[in-house]
Amino acid sequence: MTLAVATKSTHVKEYEETISRNVKLYLSMRGMPQSSLAEPLGIRQSSVSMKMKGNTAWSVADVVNAADFLGVLPEDLLDDSVLRSAQAKYGVDMKKAAGGPAAVKLPQLGLNQRHFD
Image (cartoon, rainbow, N blue to C red; front, side, top):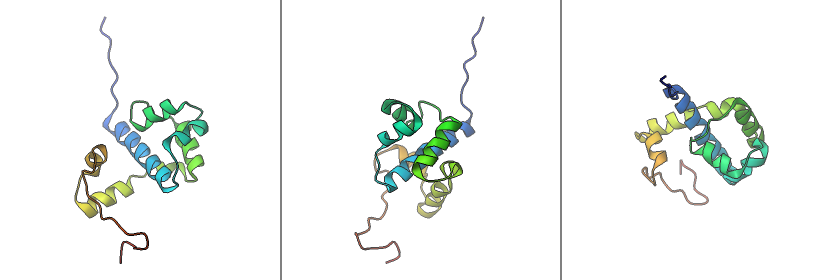
């Protein structure tokens, strides 16, 4: 008897990476640690870490609860337009860059400086 091992489709992996990347972005924008998601998702902090690293899948309930906690719509967590915009603007594969330390050097702005100054 041969046991087939299920693998995630490319689309599933891409959506899960997009969700994790967007959750990290919204947490960062709000100055919140990743661990703050544990209670709203009803899981331990270590389980949040596993989701963010892509080791554990995001359920529909996880996406909805994370979106509610972050004050955004669930579809905002599935939207990869920020990633696509950065790729177009900087000409770099941001998926690969996000995985490594400072692979892309983005401009640093001063406290009172806007991106168009």
